[in-house]
Length: 310
Image 1 (cartoon, rainbow, N blue to C red):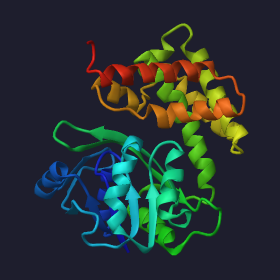
Image 2 (image 1 turned 120 degrees about the vertical axis):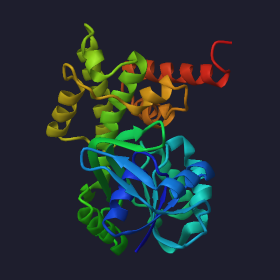
Image 3 (image 1 turned 90 degrees about the vertical axis):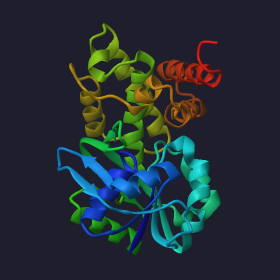
């Protein structure tokens, strides 16, 4: 089975490196600068689960080496349009696309371009970032989840990907209810991304404020109500687990969107926060905290677009 991974960052790079290490046929589709570095130095991974340097196959054109059995999209949600253009030449009659983007908006775009039958559901719980020299700094989390969005038995390609993940020692894998898992992650991400970006701190920093725990809890409830209205209410156990992690005194949890803001980069505000707010409005759900958080993100994007304090 031939797997193409678009992107070699904290998610795609770590996942692909572990799969390659275990013997899977992995190719990375990368931009020229990143491609040159990876070709020269390999994929450098530093992780509590073991450091490694993996020489891997790299292409800069999706048509090279294709068509592929599986194409994994491990890019930021705001790069979806360019990602689609890049992977289009890699898609064959029997290719399965596994997007690992945040939120849900990308599914409609991918379905319209390639057909819903080709697009599986997927998400990552891989914690980490790129270091100053392009190395992948994994902080311990190493889980992936993917499956059929229509609830039917998994196609052969997804079953094979699941086997490869298990061989590589990755957590998760094939999920028979990927739609619920996507929503469970989204309500967590919508909450932590909103708070970390608006309050410019980690979970621990936010919990040091007088109202931090109360506001975080309110935000989580807003997101939970939206999921329920969309037909994917999380279980009480899931909600309790998310609340515990997001209201932990001294917690080190932080949304990657804060790092993007601090370096003046593009953010997934629309996909993570704006979309769930839009669904709240559609269902008549009051969401004052989501409104504030999204307005904050939009203000940041407006300031960034004009070049900062000008």
